[in-house]
Image (tube, rainbow, N blue to C red; front, side, top):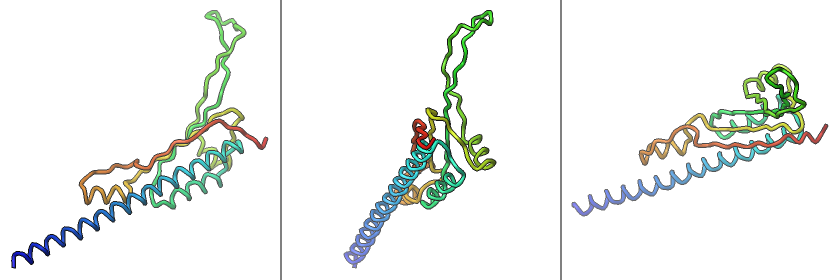
Length: 171
């Protein structure tokens, strides 16, 4: 009788272990696919902006919709760096016939405000544009890991960062 009970317990543990491993593997693959989608869509979006020299409301909304298709919530941070030339003056206020270069940064709040108001945000050739995307929620793989293994996952497990110089090839 005890031999049958031991076999049933062993079989139950074996089945639970096998199903847990399969579930962990499948959810990890789902997280990897979501990471790949975020990487690919972010690269395509940034390259499109860099090539065109502008970001339209349609481009941005299509990008956000593509990210939402993964089933996760994302925090999107955009940075626009515009090269400016600052004249150099002496302590007496005399122009020294020299300029310093500096970058004036515009962040997502101002970019989004202009996109929603005007429908477009324009860049200058030679500017820099960067996008950082990170997940706000714990992914399904993170939830399964925390449930089965006890490893607490945090938000932001899906992250990508991409950007570069504006080529503005259409102007």
